[in-house]
Image (cartoon, rainbow, N blue to C red; front, side, top):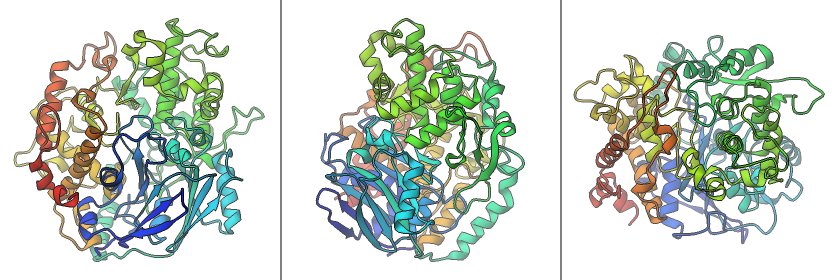
Amino acid sequence: MIGGTYGKMLHVDLTSGDVRVEEPSDDVYRLLVGGSAMVAYYLVRDLPAGIDPLGPENLFIVAPGIMQGTNLPGSGRHGIGGKSPLTGAVGYANAGGFWGHEFKRAGFDGIVFHGRAESPVYLWIEDGEAEIRSAKHLWGKTTAPVQAAIRDELRDDRIRVAQIGPAGENQVLYANVIHDLNRAAGRNGMGALMGSKNLKAIAVRGTMRPPTVDQDAVRRVAKWLGDHYKDRMAWATAGIGRGTQDSLMGWGALGGLPTRNFSKAVFENRHLLSGQRNYEMYLKERDTCQACPVRCKQVFENESDDPYRRLDPAYGGAEYEAMGAFGSCCGVEDNLAVLKANELSNAYGLDVISAGVSIAFVMECFERGILTAEDTGGIEYGWGNAEVLPRTVEMIANREGFGDVIAEGVARMSERFGPETKSFAVTVKRQELPMHEPRLKAGLGVGYAVCPIGADHMANIHDTDFASEGWMLSRVNDVMDEPLEPMPPDELSEEKMQIFHREVNFMHFQDCALNCHFYCYAYHHLAEALAGVTGETYSPEDVLDVGARFQTLARMFNMREGFTAEDDRLPERVKEPFDEGPIAGIGISDKELDWCIHRYYEMMGWDRETGEPTDACLQELGLADLLA
């Protein structure tokens, strides 16, 4: 058994109530590390082809990484996955906070849920023991009351709870899984998958410690981070920045803040949604994740007799993605309405990105006359209508009225409303685009297109990071034979693809390990930490291979489920240049996008035309033997 693991994967059959333990080989841990690669491995190995994502045959997988439980800064994250109800492709999401660390201390390396419970249940895990318990009394409740009820029932306020809200119970296709009330494993509809299994929550408490082979190596990396994070992560540190929401003003000035469903170049009144304004008006305190010194999380509070203007600090506060999706993307300037929509998303269990973009899509349909108030139950969905936001979040989660339609997401709404909506349906593989503009960051656009889980901004590059000298470019140059020079954000070239190939594999590695993407680690730092935890030898190139294994396994799964190279595409809207604003005249042509995609296939060792992983690729990555 290698370090950082117990050698135990818990399998829970919700249909029969049976619980068993699998002992994977050391090679599974050594090659996959955990997280997203472990999810993809079980889907390829155990899931029959073509199953209904909301049927009992689907697997719901909880997959922390080897780094969890070590107290390495940034390691307070964990992953979940299955076949996505939203996309039909591999589904994966991860979250920070404290749940994953607590789970790892409970004695297992992950959980695979099978089947469907006859009635609502939750799983209780404590120090190597697992018990399925009734959740009938919890069904229908929002997340804060459920967490309180479970802690009361089990008589321990230190229990950590992962759960779905009513949105997951009602199988909203972009329902998420909420941890600690304010950390969301947000994308791909994993909450709907839990709901389809009648699985309300997973409660954990642990006092065990997974073994670390060389603790000094982990401490060295942690010390380096402690010496450097304030300089390199100034946007996030206490007293200097306000977490991700502080980036809204910067992206707006550069033309990178999606506005009115990606149709406008500039959101003029973006200062009304700024992190600075939110802090001045509503900040109660700051929060953090396990073993993290940065404290980039915020907690907002507002007293009001109007429930739609009251902010409950139990649910934390909005990040950049929520401020953009519910705010600028919908043309809404009222920061309190946006913050309330975010709070309700945490209470009901909704992905803020897909929810916000879905509402923006409806607003555009309304503005174009494709929808009227008669269609929407009397609601006027015009641009900037702040009053509809909080109420619509509730309608979506409860599948109430027109919310039942919005709960299906943009791709399905576009099919329902007609072909004239296709040109402004901004999805990739049926998942809504995050709040980052491909016309500003062209490599990011390539990343949206090829990402196996659909449009994703995290397992991706942000081209603006490589437009000047700095630590982001230097970490790529550490593994280059010839160092690269800074390059414009809209450039798509061989040099940009060299960065893209390495950085995307590194981001995917961090989703396996698991580690926070915002940290300023170089590749060699996490290679050293991983070697210290496991006792195995890892070079920076080995770390990048872990990310490549996830992408290759995910590619195999997606192709088995009917996805092809034709699904690696960007929506038309975000390829077309604006005629005004900071990035006026800049678009992405089909020719250059196609070249980048096929060049990436080649770099990954996949067939250049189809993107199918080759036998040589599987052999080189060790996947052929792992799947034999």
